Image (cartoon, one colour):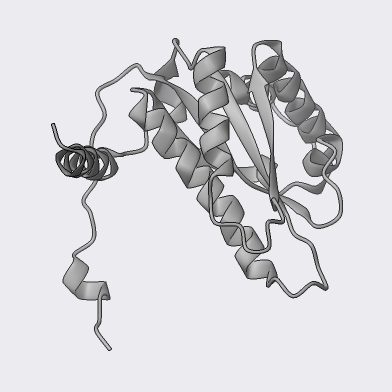
Amino acid sequence: MSDNRKLNQLGRDCLSLLLSRRSGSAKAMTDPGPSPDQLRQILTVGTRVPDHGKLTPWRFIVFEGEGRSRMGELLSDVVRETEPDPSPERLAMERNRFLRAPVVIGVISRVREAIPIPEWEQMMSAGASCMSMVLAAHSMGFVANWITEWCAYHPLVRERLGLKSGERIAGFIYIGTSAVPLEDRARPDLDRFVTRF
C-alpha cells in the first residue's frame, strides 16, 4: 500500500473514531481498566496538546487501586466537616465516588499569571488535555467520562489534594469498561449554530 493510501486510511479511521466517541456513565463502569502501559499511553496523549509558550499548564493525579479509596475517605471527611449532620448514605456515596471506575485521572489546570500568554489559553490547554485522554481511552476500547462534580470546586478538597495558587481541577477522567450498552444522545443540528462570515 502506498504512503498516501496508508495516510488516507489512517485519516478515515481517525475520523470514524472521533465520530463514534460517546461518554459512558461513571456509575456503569467496571473492570478491566487500562493496563499500566495503556495508562502511560493515555497520559502521554494528554501531554500532546496545544500549549502556547510551552508552559505545560496542567498536571495529572492518578487515582487507582487503594488511591481511589483514600480519595473517597478524603471526600467523606470533607462532607462530615462542612455539612450539618450528613446521612450515612451521603457519606457512603462519597466513599464510593472514586470506586466507580478502575482508573480516574484528575487533570489540574496550572495557570501562570502576569505573563504574555493569556490565562484563557492556558486553561483551554488543560481542557484539550482532558479531551485527548478521553479520546485515547476510547481508541483502546475503554469508556471514559470527563466530569467535575462538587469535589472539583470545593476549597477543602483542592487544599487536601495539594493544589497551589493558580491551580484548579479541570476535571476527573473516569476510565473503565462499560457494564451496559452505550447509548448515543441526540447531537446538535449544525445549521443552528454554524454561521459563515
